[in-house]
Length: 72
Image (cartoon, rainbow, N blue to C red; front, side):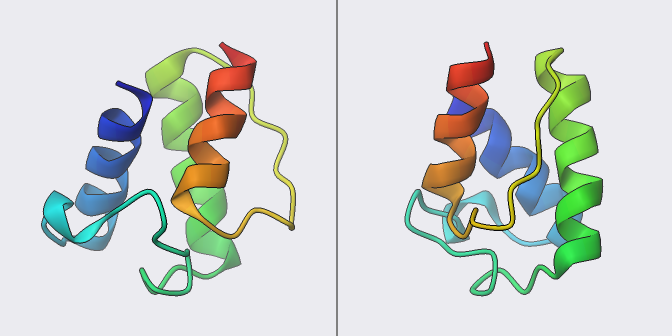
């Protein structure tokens, strides 16, 4: 469930098909820079009703999903 919601937000943000996003996709693969990441994190915080502490070591969708799951 977390992955599906996260992938949907990423797909909408980048205007790509959600099927192009996997757990192993890196932010670089998706063409996301640090500003994009901040905006996406704000959307994810709203979607999940949590606060996400941004960590520069986050590189993949899997790491982001794991972070969200730990915050729920």
